[in-house]
Amino acid sequence: MSNKSFLLVLRDHEDRWVRFSPDELQATLEKFAAWNADLRAAEAFGGAGKLSADLGTTIRNVAGDMVVDGPFSEAKEAIAGYYIVTVADRATAEMLAKRCPILTYGGSVEVREMLGTVAP
Image (cartoon, one colour):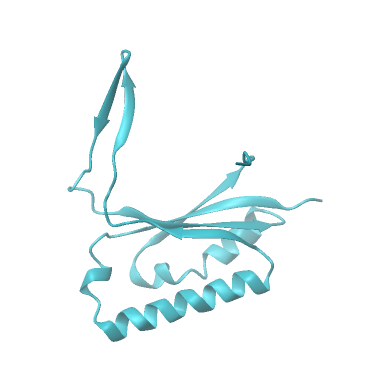
C-alpha cells in the first residue's frame, strides 16, 4: 500500500498573532518547531508554508468577465499556512493534524487528500 499526500490547511484569526507578547510568540514558535520535528521524525513532512496576513484576492469568471474581489477585511478567520504530509491514510493525517499547535489557540486544521501534483 502506497502512502498518500494530504494538505493540512491551518486557519486562524488573522489578528491573533500580533497581540502576542514577544515571550508568547517565542513559546508558540517553539511549539511549532517541536511539531515540525515530530512530523519529520515520522517521515511524514512533505513541506510547509506560512501565508502573509494579507487576505489576498479571489478571481472569478463571471459571465466571461474576470472579476477580482478582496481582500475581505470582514473575514474573521483566514488561512494562516499549510503543511503537506505523506502518510498511509486519512486517519494518520488527522492524528497528526490533531497535534498542531494552532488548535491550542482556537484555530483549525482542515485535512484534504491530494490527488496528485505537477512537477515544475
